[in-house]
Length: 175
Ligand SMILES: CC(C)(COP(=O)(O)OP(=O)(O)OC[C@H]1O[C@@H](n2cnc3c(N)ncnc32)[C@H](O)[C@@H]1OP(=O)(O)O)[C@@H](O)C(=O)NCCC(=O)NCCS
Image 1 (spheres, rainbow, N blue to C red):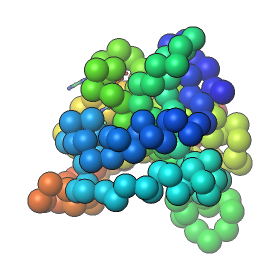
Image 2 (image 1 turned 120 degrees about the vertical axis):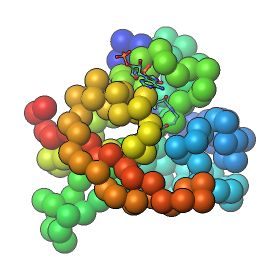
Image 3 (image 1 turned 180 degrees about the vertical axis):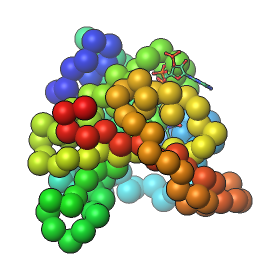
Image 4 (image 1 turned 90 degrees about the vertical axis):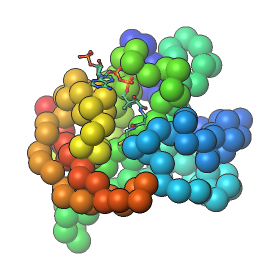
């Protein structure tokens, strides 16, 4: 369990899988910047059966309100490589909060906690995140979580019928 002042990150348990599977194709839940067309049901279940959704290459944690079992969303990570050797691996992180739980500071804290967890658990130098150039809430949340804006990945993402520029952010070990 990874505890902040407001939220806690914890591994998935069986009932969480059903909770998030129900929201697989709920575009209102995922938001315009996190919707990539219809997704097959059962992906979470198979990932949970395989690794508990906690694997060094990729993983997902549930975000709950501290001291409760109220689920406010999830955070995720996956390994990205900048060379074939171990020292060139880093993690890219993502987040999705329930629409009713946004704007309360949970996104900042959850992403700060996830970065701290990854730095503590794996010998990486760099954690990165990218988001749509129009996703001002996520850009602000990443900056408040200690990430540095690096630049624009032009037309990197196909979503909702067009290509979108992404803003890239990173946080280095010790920052
Ligand atoms: C993006 C997201 C994770 C941010 O988390 P959050 O808990 O809502 O954000 P926080 O409450 O921590 O606030 C972050 C900052 O963004 C600001 N903000 C929120 N919405 C904003 C908007 N539409 N425009 C500009 N700033 C905004 C907040 O005011 C706050 O800054 P402040 O403290 O200086 O006032 C959350 O809104 C979310 O899950 N959105 C849908 C999924 C998504 O877009 N994920 C990222 C995809 S890459």
